Length: 162
Image 1 (spheres, rainbow, N blue to C red):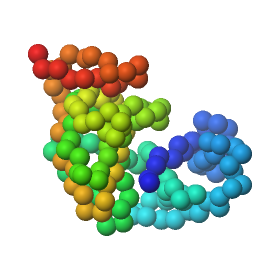
Image 2 (image 1 turned 90 degrees about the horizontal axis):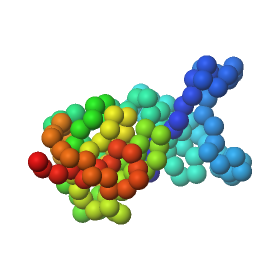
Image 3 (image 1 turned 60 degrees about the vertical axis):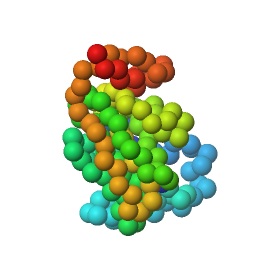
């Protein structure tokens, strides 16, 4: 599963050794896996414990009319929401969609929440998960809607027609 890697610049945390530094989310797990860095499609990625991480700052924005295809390598595809809007998509039979807030908290999971239209706020990330070759054709754009919170999480709403 491709996941987001929080990369901090040296000015944010006072690091002096490198211009970008990553830290382990679980300090006790630090010595359990051997991380490796590799280049993929011109980007530097980190692999650790069966997970692959990439720099979130390079995430492609989601635009109206985008078609998202899972590549032959099978890596999940991530898109960033740059402007508030309404999102929905058909999900392939073995596919899944996750939405995380800009803080990294999962606010929608199609396996748990079913398929629905939802309002997304700026800064959210959408993860498209599927088999190699699966195609997602998300609908995304501004729409008149009345927000009705589905949960306590910020940014996830039922979308209702007026």
